[in-house]
Image: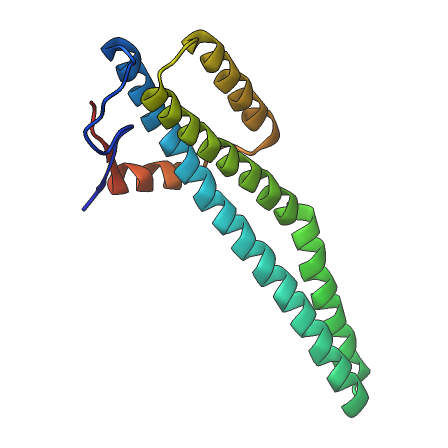
Length: 165
């Protein structure tokens, strides 16, 4: 079952001409896809960061407890080295930075979706200026974030469908 995506979910009274409204509707579907994919990426990065940090902290705690109770130093050294490896891998993959950038991207696209709805309901005085602003934001997001994973694009196609106006 898929969820429908549409610029205006309810019957509307708008002062925008039909061509501009259709153009905004296509943009809404486009940015809704980007918003959802970036939000999924944020969740993935957050999960990876939490798991690696949690495992590293748990391993250090276990090595501290075992170090005070157990006389075998090699086990403690091995656990500490494993915790350092986990933390180093997390730092190498930069999950915390990727998480912050994915959050920036999906919140930017969420604001874009809100602005598109507001423009459709309130009337567009200057559509070209608005589209230039959106293009600039899109360029910033593209420059600072990693590419969208193909699995999220495939999942989006299965979960959502665009219903044109």
